[in-house]
Image 1 (cartoon, rainbow, N blue to C red):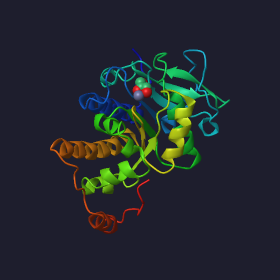
Image 2: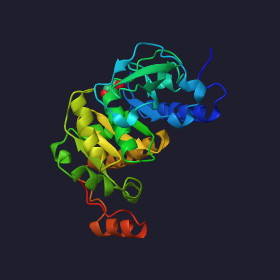
Image 3: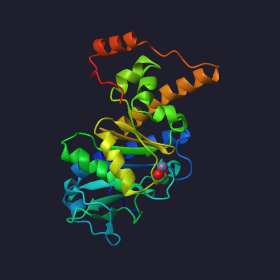
Length: 273
Ligand code: 2HA
Ligand code: ZN
């Protein structure tokens, strides 16, 4: 069967990366059944042939008006599709969508009429923000990382800055590679516009946001970057839980040791928030 990826190696490489990452999500146990979703802005790969592709299904509403997305193109995981299936067949478990001129609806143009992710309002609101602010980030990743979700069930970690402070103090790499920490969004209905709005507020200060008792949303230059951001924080959460399961609250790196890492590696001196 013909695919939009045929004879387009650069676009195919982007989709191959998505497929590689979704395999990792499944292996890590972060992607039960159809859990999680992904969008990637692929507008830079759109040629005149892609631009003239007809819609495969009637246009559908996003649920928000997103002016910076006019005429932009995204790869989006399909709703109800499994990450582990997407790893093998990305164009059967996801689709390329085009945002219509009203900036409030989208149409599916390739390869098949696979309906995009249920969290589309959140993902596209983030993509709109990234474009509005001139960011080079192209990818959004929502997944269900076990240890981070587990921590979000404990009231203490929902207090401003507490989760970031503890995760940063687990190993120096967390501070170095997740220097913006993790934002917290109080529980909201999955797929809702309220969830999208609250996520947007937190992503202004962080690259990864934790949805209480649900999962994470990360933004990154590409899907590997969004995955790495999530993985680094989840590794720190895992270390925290391993220490706790040995019977005590871990000491964590001292404030002084953390300040030294920030200085030597020229990291932004952000307070946990
Ligand atoms: O796509 O994870 O939040 C399934 C979900 C919704
Ligand atoms: Zn989810």
